[in-house]
Length: 241
Image 1 (cartoon, rainbow, N blue to C red):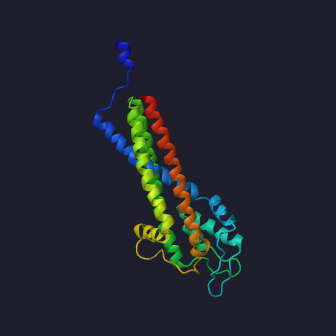
Image 2 (cartoon, helix red, strand yellow):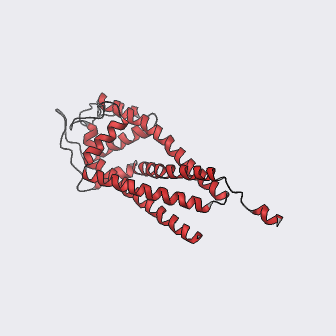
Image 3 (cartoon, one colour):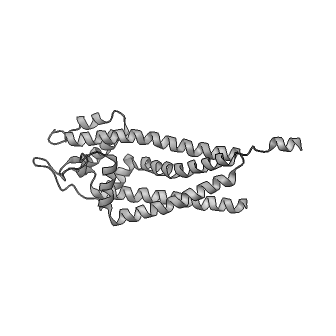
């Protein structure tokens, strides 16, 4: 009897179990959506977008400028991405020049906005790591304590609630992308520093269609992952009795 008790996992107090479930419920959608953000923030995705026959052409060169060829336009888009992912990336924009004219490719307003994006990305990266640390740490804690059903219930509840929320968000994006895009920037950026002319380089290399596609992919990937987690945790609960 003593040996059996010695091998039994020590149960957590009910309050501690509940706290772990809440933390898992909060961390799961954050970890997934930010992981997908960084999966899309790649040169490969930019290439994928530019390869699309439906990708908008560069139709608004500034006075004295020229329509950007595909190769130069894509290169500037990749450079813009690197400028916000790298801690010292803004200097890439400051040094960028148009191939034909030698003029600066980005004006000061664009550089200032991308600097704000760079700062935001660095903060988001910390949130991403913390979310995964909380999610994995609390899941391991529940497993070690023998609280498998509590873990599966937390995953089930979080994934179902997040599915409903992201499905509603996806519908909102599909029906009113411009409203969503504006609201997003007003939440994360001060003033109107994110507003640009059609002739500004950032708009020319990242047209509205690009951001619409990012939103669709982000919502689709997250919904698919949440669906798999919901189905898996539900099946695990049924097997556990």
